[in-house]
Amino acid sequence: MSKSRGNVIYADDLISLYGVDAVRYYVLHEMPYENDGTITWELMTERYNSDLANILGNLVKRTISMTNKYFDGVVTKTGAEADVDADLKAVVTAARDKVAAKMDDLRVADAIDEVFAIFKRSNKYIDETEPWTLAKDEAGKDRLAEVMYNLTESIAIGANLLYSYMPETAKAILAQIGENDLRDYEDLDKFGLFESGKKVTADPETLFARLNLEDIMKKVEEIRAAQRAEYERENGITSEENPEAAGDGIDLEPKAEISYDDFAKLQLQVGQIISCEEVPKSKKLLCSQVKIGSKTRQILSGIKSGYSAEEMVGKKVVVLTNLAPRQIAGLTSEGMLLCAENAEGELSLLGVDKDMPAGAEIG
Image (cartoon, rainbow, N blue to C red):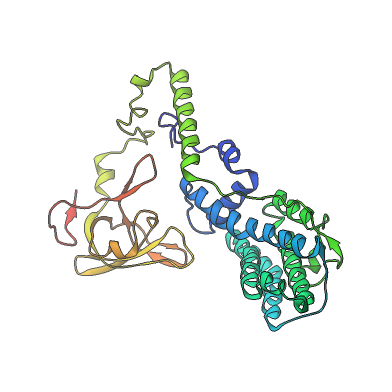
């Protein structure tokens, strides 16, 4: 990142476009334990829309809106249960201990996934029970009330568990369903503590309105232009003197100078990828089996944003082969694929422009 290129992502800018809790969510969820994380404006917007707007925000608003439509906002437990309720309750009541177990292992991203499992299961429960169908028959009124109670209770428990990661959002959710105080942590594995007869808000707030990527990127361009202008003022140069502002190249901060002997220690060879697959639970890693000479090595690379596993197969690439093996995401990586990255974060594997055999030395 460089201010001369105008591509530094500052927390204040993220917050101005997405809000504090959305930024908290992305950083905690997308920087998984033992793995590198990637942040771009495009990925941030995608995660905001898919997780926060669709899964969480939509669930809360639908539930409150239906409660107002069918019961004037009153949440009532009637006891009119059905078999489908049991699985919902099992997911919700198991979440507290699953979150705690993940946090014990410092797996914050996985812990948040356990919280969102409640919201995902609740959305599925709406599809399973079809409250709009129950509302057409007076005989189904008690069952409809029980469905709305179960949804509200699930949201309440989920919001309590979410508080550690997204406090402002959690408090906003609880306020909208009429439960202003956090529950005792020891009670978060108990289903049915929401007070029957309580009212939800008559005017539900949209917690996370869907964002249009094109609109976001227009604002990002303004941010980038402001960064470049600041860089130019600080350095007393004009835009014409800042080649990166004109897209003429990328200047990196120089590293310490090395000798030829230092460089000669690196063993670079042509490798041919014979198979590749995604690493489970990793949003960035691909695991490639790379033929180098007569042997095959396993190499993990954080390039899934630029390549699919399928298109990797058959490529001839540049491999650093005398890099000490290391453990990544529980797997052993025995080398490094060399790759270039531009100012927009796009990746390009380094290859060879002639038909060189796997194992050929580069240097």
